[in-house]
Length: 510
Ligand code: AHR
Image (cartoon, rainbow, N blue to C red; front, side):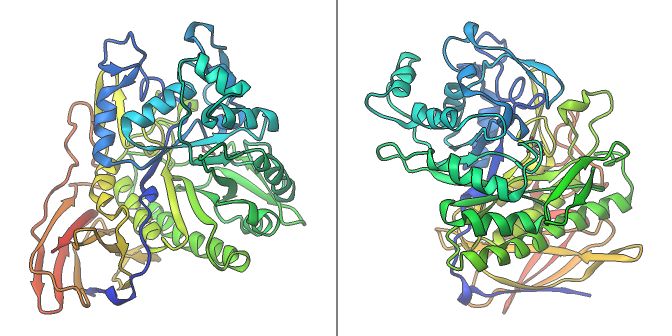
């Protein structure tokens, strides 16, 4: 069957928020240390301790927003440990992630320096699980207060005269789990309390983000929206794409869930996998759409004007760690499977940009679905990096709603759509379309009807591979990287394209 995609240019009304292409930096494994941060004395080229090759690679992606310091780490982080002269900074044990010593050399000042070097918006996640209201209030004051105040004076004494601009602030992380194992009702009350003291100092207006549900925990969204909806700007959904979940979920009579780690759970290998595991990841990525639609429907009940954004501030694939690496570091390789699943998720976020206004891939470097992997001074760009680079054309462009009738990709008894797509018109008036073929065995024949959009020329790039588990290595860093795509032919109502098996394609019609 041929896939048909009809683009409804006449129905375009929402912008694809650039923050959908956001990232996430956690003090986990080698994300911060060896990833972003090498320290001023490192032989690796750096500016004030921040790796220059990383900054250069991420600037290519135009990363719009960066979340920090966690994750589970955020609810154990005490910001005062990470300011002032480095030799005097407190050392702590990163109990969540490998039990290693955290020397706090990368703290608030270093994070803002990183954001300035990247030209990206900072998004800070505060500590509700083990921190106090006072501590959170003081952190915001330290970062954003101009003039005279105890925290502003302390910041100045630490070398930063003027406050930083900070918009995005998360009030806790996964408070149903590592952030305190709370019930939704309890967290909703705590959110109301903590967020009251997350103040706007001077001109700085904070956009407050509540810790949202895990995957399909609709009870959490219901309670949060009902009890605290008017006090938040965003609700953060976390969803990881896995072959199998690693939790045993116990649901209580009150609708609240307890998530227990299943010691038997196997998540599957990142590189060494069968087609059934390829399929499982495609299916899990498509499930994102159901999650977005069902959580949005609950939000619509309490917030019909869609003032509160659904923010997917942790998403991506999660496999078993690379054999021989620290199990607490969550280091995994990244293959063509990651690339196609990222394309599915990003297309879903784009297509739901009326409610989804930020997403943060977990995690930028050396952890889970990383866009960059490092080994000493070497760095490689993963297939997922290339997807973000190909999709960046959608940032702040106007979404063009599509009607998609896809052929099926079948595996055993099950099937998913073979083609996923989204389209937008950029500031220069070009129509950009991103799509992927989820089927590792067949081309996808696609007929595009471009509605009122009359383009005269079409160009494109494709990210494809010779096998499902093709990936980039430190010895062969460009095995999976985009090449020009010549498989699209214009016709009177649009164009036709033949999309290679297991590939991601970005097309521009102008
Ligand atoms: O991204 C790894 C961890 O996954 C984060 O720290 C946590 O928020 C989530 O459970």
